[in-house]
Length: 117
Image 1 (cartoon, rainbow, N blue to C red):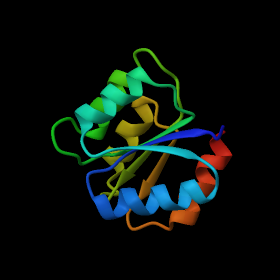
Image 2: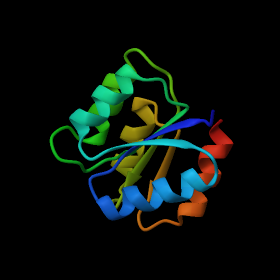
Image 3: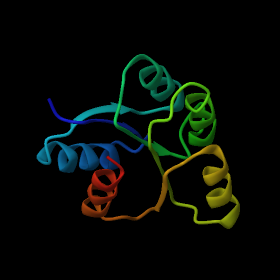
């Protein structure tokens, strides 16, 4: 069975693109389109890597990461359209493994995931 990745991204175009690229590399991919769903899935199932968009409906990615870190040390990649230093620092403080700015190359995301696992 392939390595498992959770993609939490509210823009369906982006989540489906990532899913397609990851599945081509034999990853098993679960998708969540909001923060609450992402947290629920992340807490119920084991993942090798979690990709979290910062700006999602309901709970934002930082809040989801904060909750995940209370019980899990799964590598987390934060996605954001904002490259502000405060966001980078906050992600780092909460335990994010990587921070990727949009727009990005899906191939780069796959490479970063492979580097984390």
